[in-house]
Image (cartoon, rainbow, N blue to C red; front, side, top):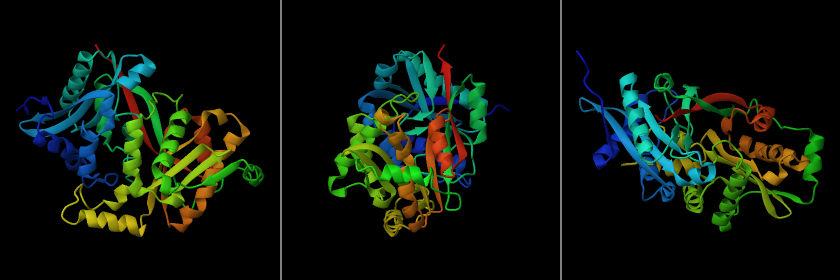
Amino acid sequence: MSPGPVVVQPVESGRDLADFIALPKRLYRGRKGYVAPLDLERKEMLSRKKNPYFQHAEGELFVARRAGEVVGRISAQFCRLHQEKYRDDTGHFGWLDSIDDINVMRALAGASEGWLKAHGAKRILGPFSFSSNEETGLLVDGFDATPMLMMPYHLPHQGTLIEACGFTKARDLLSYTVDQATYHAVGSNRMLDKVQSDGRIRLRSLDMKNYKPDLAALLQVFNDAWSDNWEMVPFAQPEIEAAAASMKPLIDLDLVVIAEIDNEVAGMLVCLPNLLEAVRDLDGGLLPFGFAKLLWRLKRKTLKTARVPLMGIRRKYHGTLTGAALLPLMFHRLKGPFFARGLEQVELGWILEDNLPMRRVLEGIGAKVYKTHRVYRKAIA
């Protein structure tokens, strides 16, 4: 007996949105590598009113159902900032989750491609939820690795299915892990001493009295440092302001390193406590007692895992001795707090597979690749 047709429809109601958000919990609950993010945070990311991405983009969410049961979800989005920079008529898809059924994946991909074609796109790239500055890629390796904030989770069948729909690999993004047993200083002591003795260079943390301008400066360094990277679209000012607000509750001053040269921010490294560890038993909810649990866990600083989502050096220092030493110097500065906080694991990523200079720095401190997320592409017929 046929299981029935797959029906893909836009998310139009509150019930549709709830189904869209709930699907991954049903698909992945109980998996070692998965912890449900907070529903409230998902709603804000998906909100056209609250997510500043939609100030320069259009998008649509889709839910796939069969016999009334939700069996998949996907988004389609077209970013004007991406088009202004690359002029390549590329649209994006994201928020991809599906049961292990090729018919479901074909229906989802078809809905996303159709929406993008109607908006003038000639090729599709993703998954991005929603942009390259948010959750990126389909997990293709590391399914049992530690769940981390801002990192998407998938099961092996989803890569197989999306490839069966004609999508091919565009690029792999690597996540590294380092722990207390493997973390060591990088670079020669002589090199570090030489750079540290340069009176123009100063290392500091965030100034919470000037938090917004300080973090804005860090994100501007990020925009500059990664501006030549594949598919990079810079943070727009509203996105900088939103990122500053969302990260503030997670900031641990000892885990943020700012490098200044001649009083200008030249490099930065931001390590955030792993929010997913703090919400691991909440199943995405904050009521009735989840919010109190979350605040208590963050306040006590008892989390054992963390992630570095932001790091970089201004482009003008790329290829210079000073630039080559800044990241090792910042990692050297982070080592003390890493041990003092009792952190057992720090994730560093994403890193493009062909970003060999950055990979050498991370491997130099003892970090190893433990997750791979893949970005796929396809021409739209």
